[in-house]
Length: 355
Image 1 (cartoon, rainbow, N blue to C red):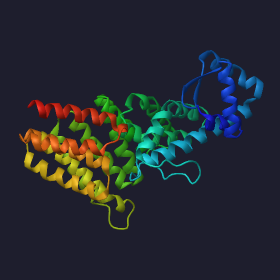
Image 2 (cartoon, rainbow, N blue to C red):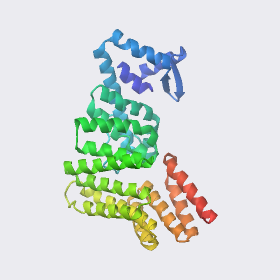
Image 3 (cartoon, helix red, strand yellow):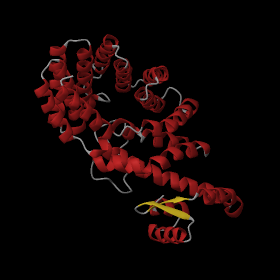
Image 4 (tube, rainbow, N blue to C red):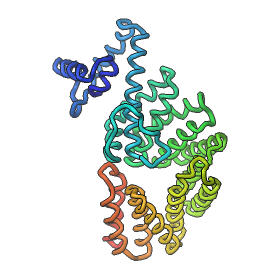
């Protein structure tokens, strides 16, 4: 925790909370784990859990929990919006609280808080703050998409999916949670579970009449096929997703996202075509997607498309050009995109080694 979360718990100012934290650390009730962040020692945490209710009463303890959950949610929403400002899967930033200046700082803030956020989803469900639990889980999306925190966020997504099915079944929120769960499970190679979650997302989006969400969830089914090297099936899903996006007319909800969504679908089709051996078609689509994201100033998606393009060029024997694309992609990514930077390093070795 830091002074702001401690202030929410104790209902004091951050300055007063900082003083209290320093005093607690001086007498070894807390450990300093990072700059201005503290952690209770296990025996102290257990003692406080056992004595808080009898000493302060249930209403006061419940109010403190609610204040901390609200403070965490505010921080998470600001960070998620900063990390993925173009995505409809993240909420708009709250009007109050501290904003983050750019995507890297947003991802870093979520990463620093991930332990608290995951625990907060379960606490919010336990205290029957259902909406808070689901919003906290949705705010984890940039961490799994950009930073590869799949193992860390999976417990929270499981709790949130169960909570959504119980309290908001077949809703947009349930669909969003199942989408995140399917994505996370897919990244971890748990294909059967991932497929079930992705199909649940498609069904909930259709039930809610959310065309944009339905198309995105169909696209996820394609990605799961792609990761399993089922390239023809993946390509069919990506084409289907493109058709669903085409049902969104000008002026309808999601219309402003269609161009970007189609560029993403185009990129994924290019990936599938590469797996099918249709390298010229793959290169054409991936170059188109790369140009789109360059024009939009979306460095992360441009880097991903450049990576796919480099792989296609490598397969075509154009290793020098592939290395150029790899270098371009590396320059666009921040350290927060560690999993993708590692992948690029491996791809570079393949190109340089002639494999």
